[in-house]
Length: 325
Image (cartoon, rainbow, N blue to C red; front, top):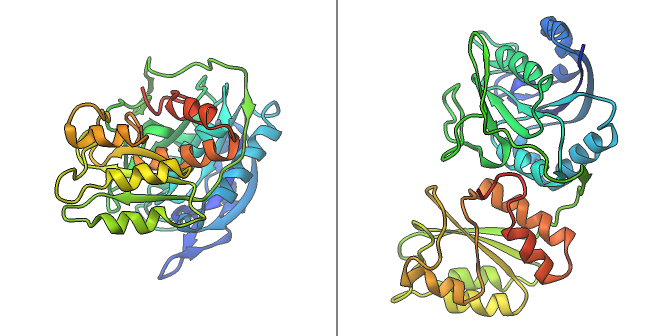
């Protein structure tokens, strides 16, 4: 029987009360869902017990370090996590666990395990079963779908179908059978763990009428090292009336890294329009098909790993875990 480590971080699945607060359910999951033991030999480790809005780089480091430390001991890993920031953490681990050869499966719930009509039991069972398969990726398992971790995003806060991966079909569908896709990636490098993240990254969402000085104030923060610019369309920003490329160019010259992603899905192409070409000329990097959820941890990871700017840019532009291709 496969050996699986279940890492609990908190989230709705184990919460109780009104309003919902974290509870000690993580340590009692096997009592609450004993059928999990029919699928795998399971150990449980409590990493933390937090609402996912409180999770970030310190917990990403803990999770990646824990998995790397017992990578050879277990056949797969399941991470119970709150839904609100699950996509960020899944993307972070996709980068920190490069060359991963075993399944790391995130799951959670929209309603607590203790509630009637909870989706928690199904999600747990599906995640543990997937964690015993030949699946060398970081994924999110939710409502019968298995999604690539660095391409997923939470798109519905009031539905059991909480996650989607625009542009990338599910890696598996869990119905009567588990139907695996041919899109599953195989490791191209030996396994290596790099659990480091620099949190000094900010995000700016472009909106019509945004004043350039609003962006300028963000970029002048001396503590800031990276900026994700969520642009319109395939990377367009105002270039005539309220041009922001000059401010960004000055910030890039000072050492700030700027990655341009789109607010609406698809691939960023900074040479497609005059209103985006200015960003390329300013030294901003095109984020490809990355969503904000994938771009933020990747930039944090690159800043922490690479002191040399050319090496950092090479990493940011490289498809590490399927986040760009």
